[in-house]
Amino acid sequence: MPTFSDGFQRLYCDPAVFDPFSAWHPINIRRVLPIQPQDSIIDDERLISAELAHLDDENDDTRRAVIDAYALCGLMSQEDAANVKSVIDFYGKDFFDLMGLVYANAGMFICALRWYRECLALMETQNTQARSDEAGVYANVGYCLYALCMFNEAIAWTKSCIGPRLITDVACRALIEYEAQQADGRLFAIERTIDRARYTISARDPGDIESISSRLRTATRTVAPFQESYFDWVSDTMRPLPAQDGYPFFLERDCSIFPRHKMNLLFALCGQADALITKGFIAEAKRLLFEASILEPNAGFIKERIKAL
Image 1 (cartoon, rainbow, N blue to C red):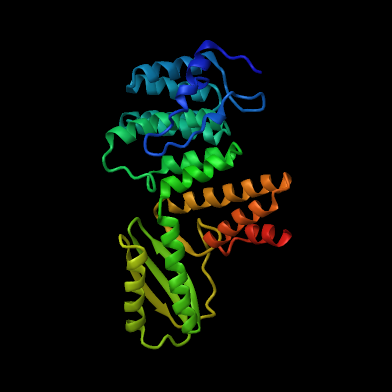
Image 2 (cartoon, rainbow, N blue to C red):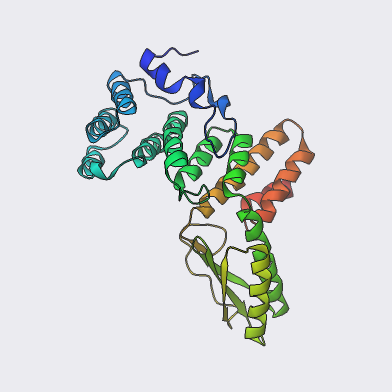
């Protein structure tokens, strides 16, 4: 086992840092410890001293010192460091999120989780408007768990964070796809904000658009009562899809964090399925892949895995 400085052990090797990790989502992630030889970390005296000082006394000076240490250790370019320091007075709890992001970008996911935990501790006690399905730090945690091959924890964490949104998304899409197929068409695109969604439906001759849209509004309100749904109809069923800029499997433009959570879950489900397949548990792997295919039927990498089985 690797040996670390006293400061590094205080910051990153204390099991209490990871258990409990979140007051809102009591998912056990203690399996990140102990740190293994293959885990990427930096145990630098200047860096550890700066982080300990900031943890003990959060202020602009200690934040600047942390950024300087990141630049010295190659975790951040000098240009980026200068840019961050120029707006250092805008940071509060978000600085812990930035610290986690710096480590995650460097592939040091255990270190990233340590600082995301500080961000969550502040958010879950001080920010009464926070939502775990919308705050980006929760999706960041899910990705780190996936990247550490902690697939079960990533699945449990993501499902806990987004709650019923996956189910309502699948149900709404199924309802709309059914109506579109009745009109010899398809669901063409989705545009979404936090509590609003606009569905573009392509059909040759949809017939009574107002009647169909009213029926869809009633149906979607039943399964997604807190979502305002809007429906646009276009007549050209053969129109090419525009370039996609984000979610890769379907034309879905979403200014919320939901697509990131969804991607984390899809990859974690497939990762856990792959791990089960190598151990011979094919039936359970199929169950996970079937769940992933329901969540995103257009994902080719999921179809390929199912076909291989």
